[in-house]
Amino acid sequence: MSDVEATEQDDTHLSLLEHLNELRKRLVWAALALMIATVFSFLFAQAILDFLLTPYSASIGGEATLQTLKPTEGLETYFKVALLSGAIIAMPVILVQFWSFISPGTTAQERRYIYIFIPSALFLFLLGIAFAWFILAPAAIFFLANFMTDIFKTEWTGQEYISFVTRLVFWMGVSFELPIIAYFVARIGVITSQNLRDQWRVAIVAVAVIAAIITPSIDPVTMLLTMAPLLVLYLLSIGLARIGQRQYERSVAI
Image (cartoon, rainbow, N blue to C red; front, side, top):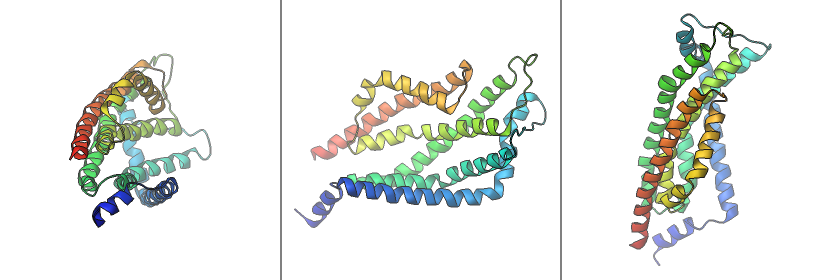
């Protein structure tokens, strides 16, 4: 066995303790990047808050303001917006740390896929954010803000509204990364497309639960608008996992 082959074999057979230590290091680096990006985002949090109010203003046909019911609610909302912005800014570093954690289970040739994985995952993350912001959020907010206005007066609190919007935008962005993650996990032989197909019933339930978490609302419009793209992403994940599985099988057969 050559030195290169021995090195690759050592890299792919880490002990449980080494895996946990590697996970700890990657989480520390990801948390550090998130903290730095969040501190930086404090400079623009007010402008981001104004921007997040635009769907609300469009829904009520005028300038929107948010109530605060607790002394610290405005400050907590401000911090939440900075944290969301920091998570988006830090996402490239978080993706690099995720890849660095799974890369010991790959060969030297497969590690070169980082140049595809990071840009692709980041693109899908931003695409998910765009989908949530331009399609999902306006439709959901308009429906909720104009529901039975002769009975209910729309005066949302800052904490509830910002939590709703930021949760919707961020987690939809994360969900859009699932297909590319499924591909690369299948590419290194961890899952197969058959596994994903066999679990379609579980997937539907999981999608419903995820949609309920992303949009804590019982109205069918918001739930369906959230579930529809998640189900499409699951189907796309099966297809990409199949491609990654075939590539893995060919590499093992050589």
